[in-house]
Length: 326
Image (spheres, rainbow, N blue to C red):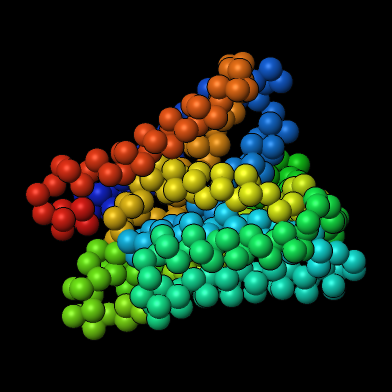
């Protein structure tokens, strides 16, 4: 296989997600009552960035052939924590940001240790830890409220030079700092190997446990980034079970729409990000075309079902599982 064909096969899901997102957003912007303007793009970018960060979080684990059902709870916990400690002066707010990110990293590390040491199935382990993380969120915020350091929130939810949404710039920076170095390191390549075939990876001397641990740890870290950004958008914290559950399910849909295989071993966080932006745009399209609000969850649920079905359908089209990994 030539280099360009290999690159296309490797990034096909990401490119398709990008094309579909651009097409759908063009339809949305073209039919919006206010027309295409910077405010419309900024609002859509801020909403999309929230799901994109949680989808990126889910991607780390899905690549190892696992699934993290606690990402929504870490997201909510980080939101509640940020509304409590990312306040006051610039210095204290900076320390609060570090505290929120460290909390997410610890939550992810706990998930990884339970899966590795306890040898539990990821779906079982993360359901349990998700309930615990949500319990901590309720302790922090039994009722909605709190605050956040305003200048930082305004800077990250506003526009750069009056044009580019700062949330998209921040999302790109996270990809450059977190995803790209990770995917090119030995531990990142090990995660793909584990997702392709854990037994073969182990027999080849790949650090299976290390790959899983860092996948879950980075999953917790990026989920906490999403919760932190939610605080910047809302200026408050809320321990909402509905929010946590929705973001968990939507993150699974986003990774599949972005070309990440639910069977592990293939895909990219960049594709998952475009999948998240696409999923968010679907909701915006329903609003623009005046679909009744009571019908919107039904259509989003159908999209979620279709996304998961598409992710599973390819397995029935191959005779050898190695064909899944070009």
